[in-house]
Length: 207
Image (tube, rainbow, N blue to C red; front, side, top):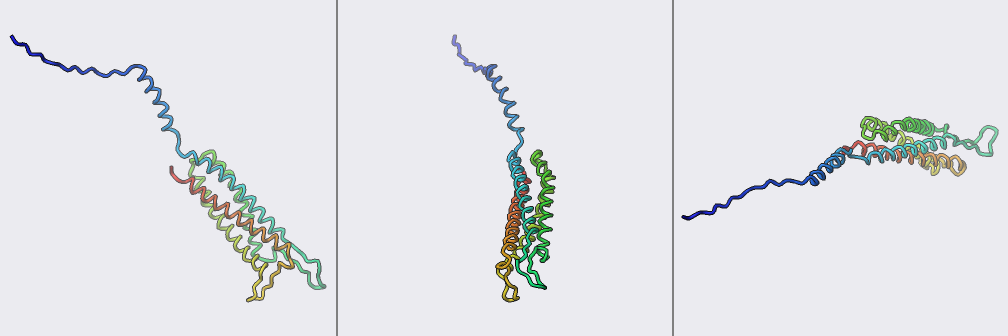
């Protein structure tokens, strides 16, 4: 009597130990916390730089307006009918410069609370959009004031032979020094406000 051997395969289910299950369970909250962590933490650094640049731009604008507004020089010699004096209010361009820089300085001062809001709520898009628009307007005004003032300062230093405009800076040295410093301050303020526009644009990027 012949007997056949039949081999049977039995599948044994793989059972994980309690230690392995406990280790996997402990990793789940950590992974969830990393996934829930907000992306874009660099925006707070951008907001801090925005505040610093705003304070610097305000100081530059105030210095430019003050330097131009106090530019007044009277020569020590005069005649019976003439007194040689140079002042910023003799030229409408310099008057516009003082008014424009005063407006820019006032705006930057009033925008500081919004800049603080962007530091606290760095993901808020509303204040950023408003600052981006107003900063662009301030940049345009500052550039216009600086460019117009620079044109008059150039004429004061070099004159224009075609129109017989004489250079006055050899006689009114202190006056020209102040107005030149005011123009430099306005361009510094313009560069800082340009950085503010760039920072606002960066902060509005979606990460």
